[in-house]
Length: 353
Image 1 (cartoon, rainbow, N blue to C red):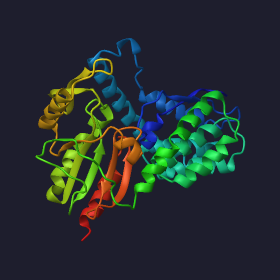
Image 2: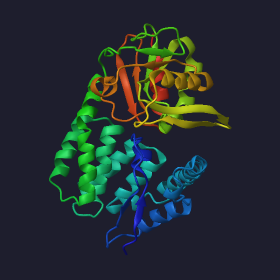
Image 3: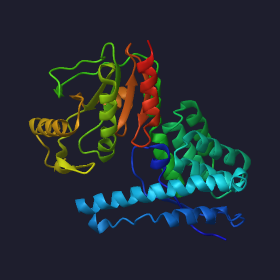
Image 4: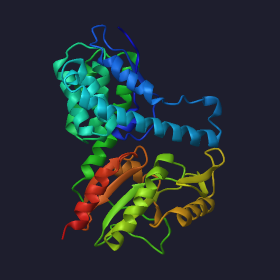
């Protein structure tokens, strides 16, 4: 039995910062049948196929994302039920791999990491061993944020017989190690200096913000995942008021996304400028003012071009850092997705005397 299995985007599983094509993997010839059952779950969720010929059609893209989100919710519901009803089959051998996969789907990154680790430690030879290793590597970078565990596993994978595709994915993850280490090294230390060039939504702004818990969101108007988390950030600002200061930190890119209004809960807009025909700084400030007026209840701060990467280790946006009242970095997160932990971190820091 060798039925192809489409694995969900690891972006969804571990909130990674960039969307990738779905991985495909082959269950082993000795498969217990659990692989086919899990594959059937995804098929039943009815994920839409993306038509690249329509990629420039904004209405098509919006409808596709809605359909995909609905399919993802169906898949999460089915995955949660499957984990409960097939606990024994998912508790050993090949089942550990699929348990890790489904735990990632429902958003339990820590449990997923443990399952993938158990699979690799107990199953010496398996076609999915490399895939589990890559999933673990992403988990260490984006979920557990364990630099030493990342380095140990990377050394292990370096010596494994990875196929060309897995090797490319491995090298891509390895290329982010320095930035990952830089981000993680900031936790527990004073907030680095952030030069302020321009401010939208306030007369002035300076870091660190004295006496308030601060959320620094590295973002840009042109970034769809950034726009996805903004309503949640705005609700947090409203909820905590003067105890919390959220700030959208960006830079001049020469292009952006001009807000044109709302349709239900959707933010509507259009792309403006490009690398070939960049916006002037004045025009880019204007589109940020339009966005701020329509959507935000916290300021937008423009900083230097190299601050994100050179100082904070930011390779993809959104990336969010949380700073306590004393100006100490306490937590960070890469990507958009489940914001539960962000809420918990803020609530804990705000409650501290």
